Image (cartoon, rainbow, N blue to C red; front, side, top):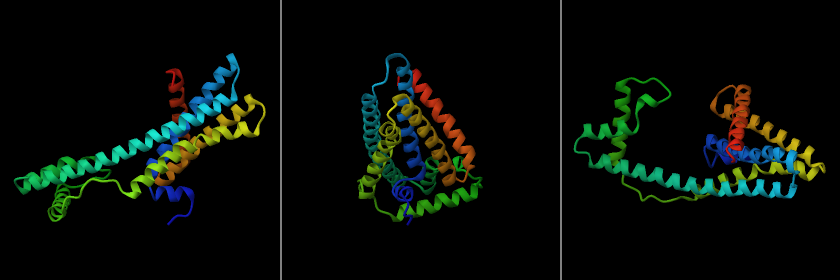
Amino acid sequence: MTSSPMGRITNIIDPGDALGEVLFGLIMALTWTIGSRLVLEKEGLNVQELLVATIGCNVAWGIIDAVLFILGTTFYRSRRLRLFRQIKAAKSESAALKVLANEFPIEEAPFSGKAADAEALYRSLLTLASRADPVKVSLSKGDLFAAIAIFFLVSATSIPAVIPFLLIDNAQLALRASNLFLIMLLFVTGYAWATFSGGRPFYAGMTMTCLGLLLVAIAIVLGG
């Protein structure tokens, strides 16, 4: 088992989901800090209000994302239970195989497969389903830990935005440092994403940085 903080988190939730939550949190924090720079030029910056708003926003969305994860997990398992019942209720083997083919289309898989191989896969799933018994949809301890991890991931991304204001007295300089720090973390997030997915880390880091800043700009323009 991986002992690093990120390794522990990815043992609880999917690495892509974890990095997606970090990206979301960084975008939320940047929306506040970059947006505040525009306010700074016109009205002056209230540092305390900025810090409270940044932390509060990320904590609130951390709670929302955690709840949405629980709802999504419940929906996914309920759908799988419904699929199981559809297979059991199928009047023939061909009908059951069609149900599986509709649910798991081989055409959408990230590899090329032959029709015979797809049928063999569906028959294996059908055999497994025919021998299994339905299980009541419920949440496990792991699901709750995953929801808590999501909450902390989104909430914790506000910390890098706050640190410069605690170390630098000049509000304008601290705001610049905060924005720079968050932008660097966008790159790190993209870099880590490619490390997990097998892509090109530097390219992914730059892409994530540009994409993140674009989304921040859209959020600011639309009043987010």
